[in-house]
Amino acid sequence: MTENRRIQVLSRTADILRALKADNRGLSLGRIAERVGLPRSTVQRIVNALVAERLVAPNAASGGYQLGPEILALAQAARQDVAGALGPVIEALSRGTGETVDLAVLRNDGMVFVDQVVGTQRLRTVSAIGETFPLTVTANGKAALAWLDDGDVARIVADERCRLGTGKMLAEARSDIKAVRKSGYALDLDEHTADISAAGIAFRVRGAVYAISIPVPSQRFRSEREALLKRLLAVRTEISRVLPDAEFRGG
Image (cartoon, rainbow, N blue to C red; front, top):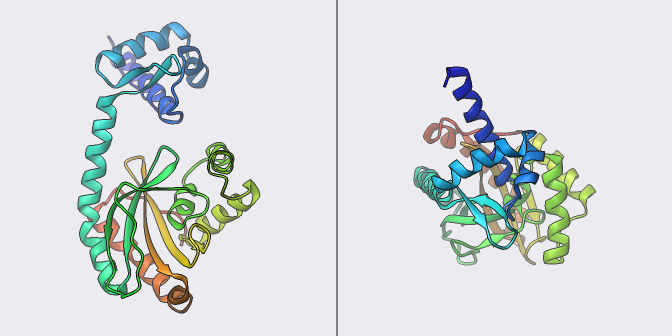
């Protein structure tokens, strides 16, 4: 196989994996072929090779294919590496503000909490590691949405309104995203939980979107908002120091 041919195969394989990543419900060979613009026979050969390596797995429910256990294990290892690197960063942010600081990752159209430092304030907010928050009504979720394309945003907005019975109308969500892309941060003002507000920033590391957020009882948030935002935006410098490949938007 020539060098150009090897590069072409790798590129096509990456396109197939990205297509499966974009739809975790599973895709048929025909649907994959449509999305990546390749003949079905070519897609089948590549998918069969990926199944043999456990990078892709059959989806019994849909009859199609989804990302396999080996890909998920690699992703988990990357998340643990990022969470470990950011541990001291969110600890310092919590000490500086006295508030709880959360680290979450965008996974399966939700924000999954992967680390947390609980604040020292007597009245404080706490969420469980592993808990999943929606995107359109949370600070970390809105910040993460700013990294997605219009099609994914529209799909997520519709899904949250249908599945959760909550969330924004598409026009509202797009307005929020526009504000995030300009300012670099997102706000949740009593939207997800009554009497709790939050500020959040999101960044991308090796293709995954992470968010750091500071949830605060709303009465205190109103008086501390500007100081919290200043500290939150400043923490991007520390994130860049420990994760040089981190990417940011706005601000």
